[in-house]
Amino acid sequence: MTAMRLPPAATMLLLSGSGMAVGLAIDCGATPPALIAGLCTAAPASLAATFRFHMTMMPAGYALTAVGSLLAVGLTTGTHRDAAAMAARLSCVALMLAGMIGGGWLAPHLAMRLGVTPGFGLLVAAMAAGMTLAAIAGAAVTHLAGMRDRARRAAASQYIMYQ
Image 1 (cartoon, rainbow, N blue to C red):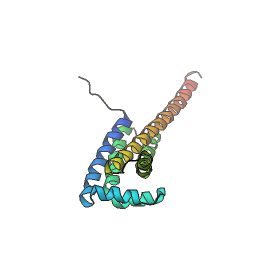
Image 2: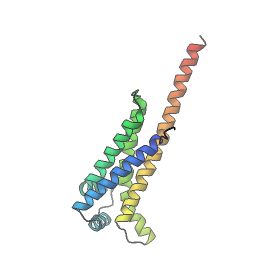
Image 3: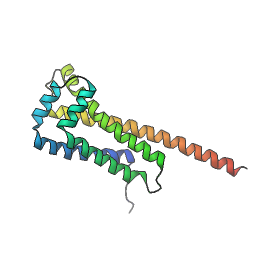
Image 4: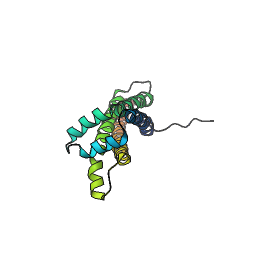
């Protein structure tokens, strides 16, 4: 029987999403979800203010998302310590955290446009969507960087082979 392996991007999403869920559960133990959602909709409209708000109100959610993401980086980079793959996956971690903040920033604006009351569910869904879109973008960049690196190595080996 062969073991099935998840692609690196799926591993990253699974572990970081799990970290986010556990972290938000911890955060909601300290601050009720309705209060977080209410404060989020009243938060200033700038991304910097949203970043400060999220780091203050949901620190465990972001910390455990980062821990899950970094665990995924360690599991998917391999033992050969490929610096380019490591750098690409670490940039994906940063993109995912930024995507969570961006999604949280957009959630109240989206709710207003849709005419719905912004709640904690919408906030979490927007953060997860931002994280997922950022992970997909990061995976695409990682894939393109890997293709470029493989092409460069293949060109060098073909040059040596035909000399």
